[in-house]
Length: 153
Image 1: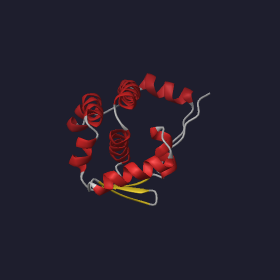
Image 2: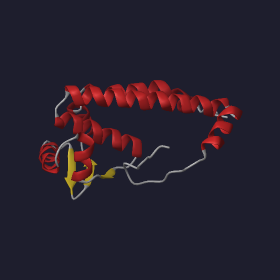
Image 3: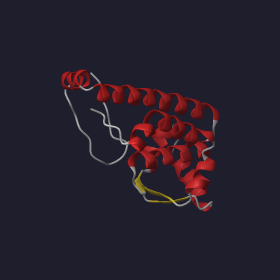
Image 4: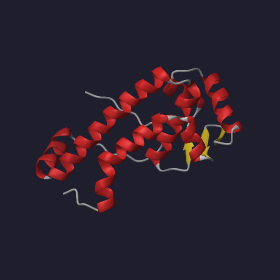
């Protein structure tokens, strides 16, 4: 049995595993999408581990905010200091300090658990190669089908 939790507000679905297996057997495009999603999840885990080992907190925070915004599609993210601290492995006070530094640079607006990206290019530069690596891999795995409008069935 697995446990999952939502990192950001939004909608989600639950399915019985048997129903997903049946769907994947009937629709090769869906099965392929599942496999590509699994590959991307592994890439995210590997990139996050490398980023955590190599980069300091400001770069990790910038990368995480960019990823959350990209994945959610929302302009404003609801992210508490406590939650960001858990994601980055630091205390709440550290989140406040580093988010404040990004805000002073004009990269984000951060107040009371709300984060808004003000300067995407600047924040991407702050995140170094971590965010670019993930976006590049995502494009390789998913964008071709989206841009061509290919059917997944």
